[in-house]
Length: 96
Image (cartoon, rainbow, N blue to C red; front, side, top):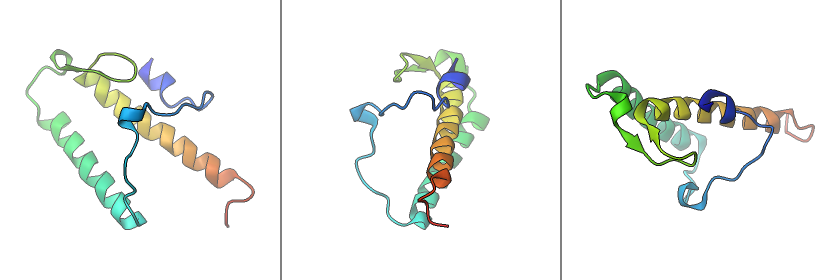
């Protein structure tokens, strides 16, 4: 369900207020550096954790998810944003 529902752009949704970005990161280089740092932390956790991913549970917009589901959610969320980028770039008014 996570891998199908989250990237689906059929229904446009606004992130819940508590998880909406509160600040702009600035230039693309800064945004990409922050993204890479957070991605490295996620990969590090996924690769090095000795915990049972199913035993760690946290709240999400979909309800409680275990760590395994959160990793899937993260990947699907990236796909959703890629879809948004593709839509913006496909707009005829997007600069060439």
